[in-house]
Length: 440
Image 1 (cartoon, rainbow, N blue to C red):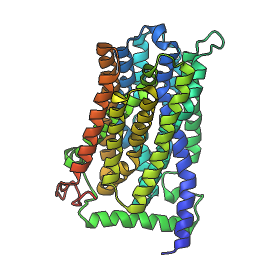
Image 2: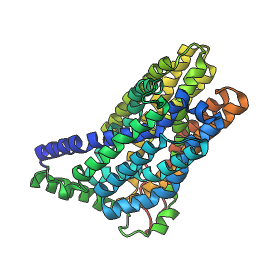
Image 3: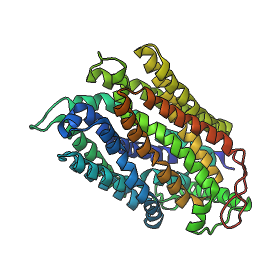
């Protein structure tokens, strides 16, 4: 193996692909959580929203996302990443921009539903796109690097968003401006995507011929090794839906996402509930701390998983840590300890993704991943509806977040148990559908 070509090629691909993926995913998360900061900036009062209504508005995104996810992934495979990801970015940017003019809970519900339709396919498209460029041993690190975008988007965006919603410009309230300022970057990056992104190494003009040849041969060699271990190249879509291992990973993702988006959409309100002396500005700055911890934990865990080659225990540790942190929030005696516990929980939440998606792509063949990733992500993301909505209902019923946070801890505990149990079973041995590997 020519190590100089290997190092040079991997470095080039990382520097070209990862910053783009990071920025695009950061913008997607800003669009998703713009509702959170609009809420504390006057949206609730302007539209007369209760906690349960806010939970429904937060989660409805994932219902349309669910129905459009797999078709979107199939279109990406058909039309290519460059065209389809550009379409996704532009369409969700336009929807977010127009959301600034909603005048009722019903119209906001419609636009949140449309946002889910527009954004469907983006994340699994990114996961699939990683398999076009990176070998198995680099995927956890690369996934972790681009997936630091959500915690960083929240860390950097929280104080900025709070500042925006507290000001009015041109007789337009700040909570409306947050949607305008979140939508414009998505449209701009979508246009850039059309000219910047390549559908695979063969079309990468920025790689030398020897670098292209090396990378293509390495990726082909990995897929051939999967074929030898039992993977069949031609797999009907209906057979992918029958795969027990795909559904096993789907339910793992589901319980994890309940916890992830329960925290994501409600964290500012949970922090506000810890003390009646916190101002909105202070809440914005306090919110930075847990998300910064989450970003650091995500990169560390992804790198450590790649360096050791171990996936299962790395993936299980994150939700366990998240559950412990949330239990700590429930039982902590004062706001300072509660914030420390939130930092621990957020670190666990975000450290899960790199090892989990690397584990997923290591045992599921590329032919299955096109549809399989869509199933895992879209069904799993129904948890993004369940988590925020149930928290809203529980908060309305009890008047506090104690039971809501305990529910999220339960979901993360279930995630940890499922990951650990997944390694106890053999994959289905079916020559038409699957692979025979144990989960390592």
